[in-house]
Amino acid sequence: MDTGTGTAGLTLSGLLAEPPAGPPRATVVAVHGGGMRAGYFDGQAQPDLSLLTLGAQLGFTVLALDRPGYGQSAEQVPDGLTLDEQAAALSGALDAFAERHAVGRGFVLLAHSYGGKLALVTAARTPGLLAVDASGVGHRYSAPSADRKRLRRHLEWEHNWGPLGLYPPGTFRAAEALVAPIPVREAAEVDLWPEMFEELAPRIDVPLRLTFAEHEAWWLHDEPDLAELTSRLSKAPVVRVERQSSAGHNISLGWAARSYHLRALAFFEECLQALA
Image (cartoon, rainbow, N blue to C red; front, side, top):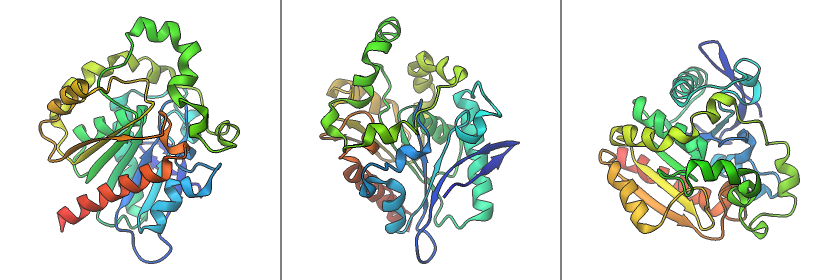
């Protein structure tokens, strides 16, 4: 179902799935990447790959939001918002959602790619989150800025998807409804991320799990790179870095989606148990 969550005059559209019986254990807020929409987490090509369906079956509320500048809010902020502005909007949206819905123990963020950046910024600047699980986001790009701009048109498909066999039949046709233009203010910050990460990483104080797909091509993720990344997250009580086999950058639309979602929800379950 669609849900509108308003904050400071901005309405964020999205998808909502709630447990069929009883209150939720917690609320998973799913945050999509650049050029996609909330339906990224509700892959239609294969029903059992949907995070929303799986999460609700396991007792979680799942709220997949269209980030500011996407979905319903695209008319309100056609140029999008900066990451700091998006973090403020997301925090306000969660407060507004909690006023009308049972959220269980609280909010956890499950995010992908550019949404992973937003999740990390939000965790660094907003108290009260229980945990963050992000895929497809690191701290150093795999190619310099000039090369990314030069090669983007030719390699974007390969970088985003990887081998076509990683995805169920019908995925790319279904994904046409999910694709949206990347707002200009969002695009303008892409090259700033490595420096932004250096500033915010030491401030993240919630359990954190990062997943890199086997065929991840946007980020550096060899062992020395991951050691450098995790060393910056000095305040997080848990930092777990994992790899998802047989997956491309868009994990939640591929055959590996169910495995990834199960692992993410298991991580959230561990975090809830630690609060008991």
